[in-house]
Length: 174
Ligand code: HEM
Ligand code: HEM
Image 1: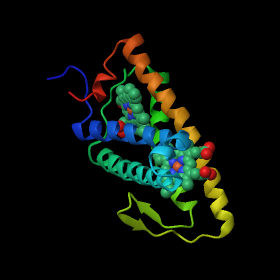
Image 2: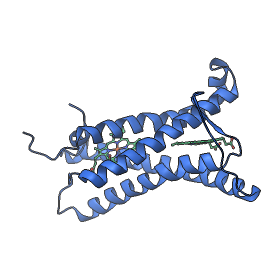
Image 3: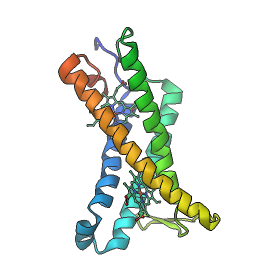
Image 4: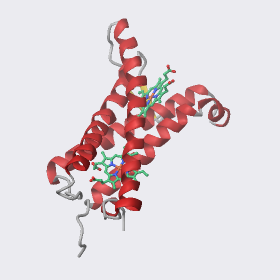
């Protein structure tokens, strides 16, 4: 038995898979010009970016379902009130943006979304001015998500190297 709370293995898998796909979605769009030379042009870059974004959305819905079903372990010291508030609010906003970013990406396009070239997800027809709104939402929310993830990773490393508690270990796959 462990002497510290652990996330369920399902939660760990979702966490690390989400981390990989979210970072991939960012990297693909940041290095789109270089990558398009290796991946057969810009349309393939967008196909990949959008399909990975859909994976992020599916993983987030699964994540929320697991949390509703099993809850999340209480890994932080009960006396560290400020730390608990900061950590929980960062995580809360990450959940919200993990839904808003892919949804706004989907809604800002008037063309069907081709999921990895296998499934075509029809576009939702919205008035023209809304496309612009969702476009701006996608850009702003994806940058806010990037900032939150950076704070989150700094927090996890702070616990591991500075506080030297078991917060990081609670999320590591053994
Ligand atoms: C978690 C998932 C996603 C992340 C982190 C993400 C992030 C980003 C970022 C950082 C940009 C570049 C913004 C800029 O040019 O300054 C971008 C652009 C774009 N994203 Fe996403 N995105 C995600 C999901 C999606 C999805 C699901 C779709 C569509 C279904 C999508 C469609 C697009 C398109 C078309 C652009 C290009 C916009 C332009 O060039 O003006 N994204 N995304
Ligand atoms: C190297 C990168 C990362 C490390 C070291 C890390 C570490 C951790 C740790 C230790 C926890 C448990 C903390 C607690 O319960 O207070 C956690 C939870 C969480 N992390 Fe990360 N994380 C990383 C990347 C990410 C990324 C990229 C995302 C967003 C996609 C993310 C989203 C979350 C969320 C939403 C939680 C709350 C619990 C859950 O639903 O899984 N993390 N992370």
